[in-house]
View 1 (cartoon, helix red, strand yellow):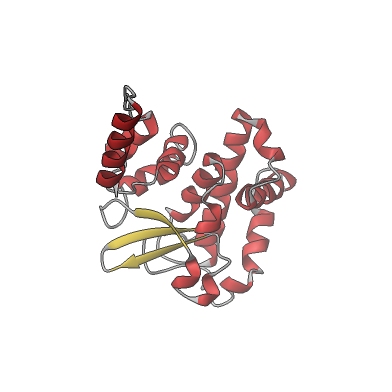
View 2 (cartoon, helix red, strand yellow; view 1 turned 90 degrees about the horizontal axis):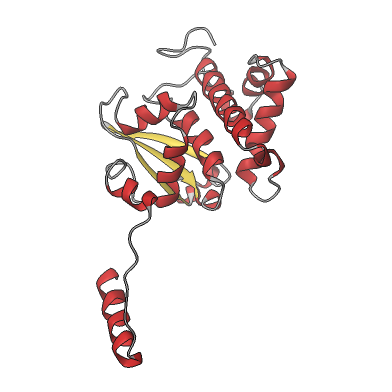
Length: 211
């Protein structure tokens, strides 16, 4: 498709007698080619990963780049989650392990979300690195997501007023829980405990014993 597009562009240029100048790659494109090539080729995801630099979520960024239990970069992409299972249709994201490869699938509906919202979501999902899950693990992951969003909102307060992105709306709900609990995880944990999708989860899982 790229070769065909280039050929067509050259043909149009010749017909119009234009002097064609090919644009240099944007910095985010370069990041995808170099830093994140084994993770994704989606510029939006690359930007989100870059946003995590210097935040509390940098640990999650490192995990996505390969510092995780598999010692391999996590593959990240947007997807219609209902194609995996119909009950996943309204999930914001999903982490899956296939053999020794971790994947993070972000709901396609969030493909136009702010990079900061995607970054916060990825900081959560990158913490799920094995086949096990628990209330403690989800509590830790949700709290990490909220704290990353809080950090990013301090840098860009306008994020708190985003009324367009459903993912930003999610992050602002988590932020409000964090603030109302004086930055403890009490309200987030109550939400996780009462979440219908987590009813069958054990209290603890490996690495998450006290959250």
